[in-house]
Image (cartoon, rainbow, N blue to C red; front, side, top):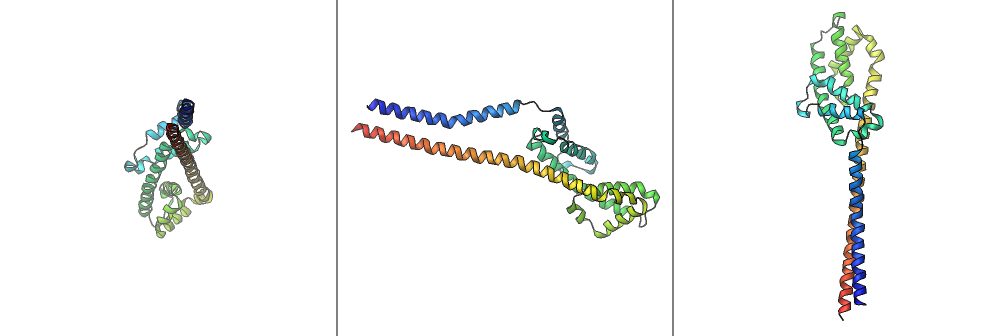
Length: 227
């Protein structure tokens, strides 16, 4: 009888250990399958573009075209965005934020350099400033001094009124939409990771408590069998 009880406790303990270790094995297999899954060529191209980007601290205005090309390529991935990875997505966002400051300074300096009354000869300069202005988010636009914004608007109306008629609202909306989509994508990925961590922590804590309970029962059985 004593051997039967001890054997039952041992089997139960081993069973609990198996239950606790099973999710680890399954999770490791899933991670392995995920890492081995083939990355689409378009996503791989974006990853390589991100790797070629400068660091956040070394971003300059000269990197504008490169950074915007990467950001637009990422936005065009659609459902394949998940293959880019959270680290690369984070780099896209931080580098774009760093570029924002450079664009803001460039726009401010170039508006100040414009003549008080723009002429047709200033059209290319005004157009370039306006295009950069459209890349700024609403907070950065609000950071510009009001007299600079008024000067830019006056210059655009004087030499390129078609820019205000066809680009202003649509470009701002598009920029805000892309920023919102990127933020939503990143938040979704981070939210899923946090949920997985919490669920795993609760599961393993429950298994550990149950295992301790089984061990305590086994010890009690052994003590009882001594008498």
